[in-house]
Length: 432
Ligand code: SAM
Ligand code: SF4
Image 1 (spheres, protein in one colour):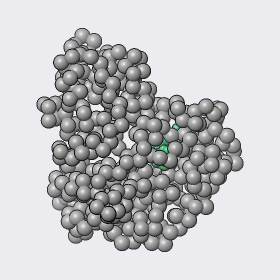
Image 2 (spheres, protein in one colour):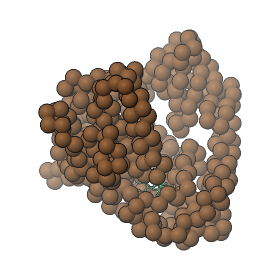
Image 3 (tube, protein in one colour):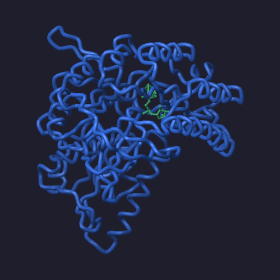
């Protein structure tokens, strides 16, 4: 979502004369769009500002702006801790950035803009077109969260659940496809909680997917991140009815232990989670799942951890993410006793080894077979290209006649845990 926000911030500031530079010293403004989900991400912000400060020691100071969730959470504290920062802007107020910059240039007074103004934000963003023309592009359709998992800062930094207007989203999607986009990834902190009502018509995530499925020249649709409790039947059936919806779902489970899920306030248990996977497999037997795992949550014991490993082995998750619990100030879990960090690191390594082994086995299955790849870009080496399979696995392949945006058939000749390698001869007819 930060990538989407960063692109939209750029669309905004380019209307008042800013343009990107690859040469750091030429910049007269630095904007860091930040994440607050784990402590490491916050510290990275201060380190990066430190680097900018050092580089500009003998040059004119650039305008320094911190936007995103760290700005939201730390607001005035941030301006005090690092006086080199001129402005903090929260994730729900970045549509005001041009006025804020112009004001700052006039008055030179530090700015803290961290209001939740999400309706206005998307209304303002609609006025300037999304300039993305990458083959695979994001669209934010929903923001915020009302679920309040005990470990998570999102409900405090992004605010309550908000869904954008259905028409706004479809319009943005059509514009992106006109720009050459061939894959759309619908985004939300709780993307499957999307719900919008307009003139007595109700729209859900499944309504958006069905509408996108009809857009000519759009080849692939994905969405993330979903919560298990919002995996409704209509959404599951989209995997049967919409051929452009890719058969990979990112559905974070966090832990394999019901005791830990309860302590986390996740509001679902493992039996319910597995029942969803069963339904998905029933509509598409090639379906695969990826997930997020938090390990060493307060009170997690060896049995709880083993339950998570067992779940991973049973389900065979691919493309997953795993993190050591990071206490976030202001959340209920932040005051709980944390586990020994060295032991946690060992646990994380053990869990990641299992995930990698499954990933490697999954990639091995492609050997000597053909698979459909959406070409994203040409690599520096003349005849090499980069693309992804339906399951998002990166593929590096050789081809004579190939362009970004094409769907091609690639014969896989070797693999690693992260990539497939191959050769393409036949272009697949466009699905659309
Ligand atoms: N809404 C999604 C869900 O309900 O699963 C997750 C979105 S959250 C922004 C992304 C991931 O960050 C979570 O799935 C979780 O694994 C991880 N995460 C969030 N808070 C964390 C914390 N305090 N410590 C470690 N990992 C955390
Ligand atoms: Fe955070 Fe997801 Fe829980 Fe919401 S549902 S509080 S975003 S982990």
